[in-house]
Length: 459
Image (cartoon, rainbow, N blue to C red; front, side, top):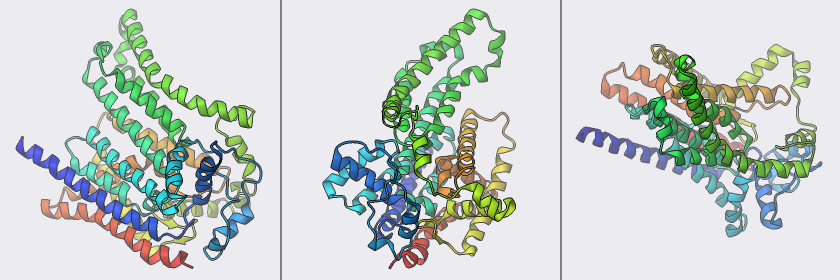
């Protein structure tokens, strides 16, 4: 028992080191990245300013997106001399992040660094929740929890986004909290026989899950990816117990009735919170435009279209360019996608990714059947990539940051893959190499800021 406690204390201490390193690096990004030199930051900032100055939520109107102005503005040489007022194209976004940021704006007079620090804090909370998620599903392997937390903390592009004004920070945190709460509910269901689920006392846990899901629905549409994941999780007892189809009909009815109550406990509060935003959008935009996306797609006329690029380049070169840019910008392509890292950096990250992928494939192959956690995390990855592809069928948006809703399962897979190889080495060497991989990512964050970002964006 003493060793178990000691291991837990050590794991928490290492998590603290990861968190402190993240905060130190992210604060440098927040302070040293020139104003408005992260994607869409001016538009997010204007949303917050509108709330503070008008005491109401904005609506996206025609003229809020100007492609020609945006192209000029994103040139670092032009940015300091151009006002951000015309950049209002994020006014269709759900409001929760902006409402949370409004008091910070008011208290600091709209200080950009203070607003960025709010995102840094939310990113720190995300690291802690990530650690708790992996400890929940892999309690006997704290190195995976630490590795996944470090992955979240030290992907350079992710640090850059967590140190800027945008709603991704809160959206990712809520998505992580939804996953954590889902796994806690699932753990209770797994530990009990299905016939005993009626004795589940932790009904408040289901209500908490519903509230978290509802808060996600009014934060960003990327959190909507959690809805089918939670739906399948609640159905898991029936999926796992295929023998129910042969049970007595009254028992089946009882089970279905119980699961229906669980659905109500989760989705009733979620839909109540979400409907506040959806009904408002219908009133503002009409045509049952519950998310404001129809208005958005109309307003952003002039944004590059996929069909046009394919016609100009051909499908093969277009696809190769899309995949390359996605990979680069997942790890780090800074500013408004105008500051890439050198090819040798991406080559090293590519080799590391392949090593991790091979290790992951070898590590998970013996597991049959897959656990509920593995299935749910795989679904989140699938839905995230599917949404990314779907959006890019219309608009050219080859930005790897759009895959960050799946960063936790991707980070867990990366950690499993690296751990597979390092566990085959002598223990001290394996530990050093495993820790060294994530320390290397942290060093890359600092190197990228001072070697690439600041020189390229400073004017």
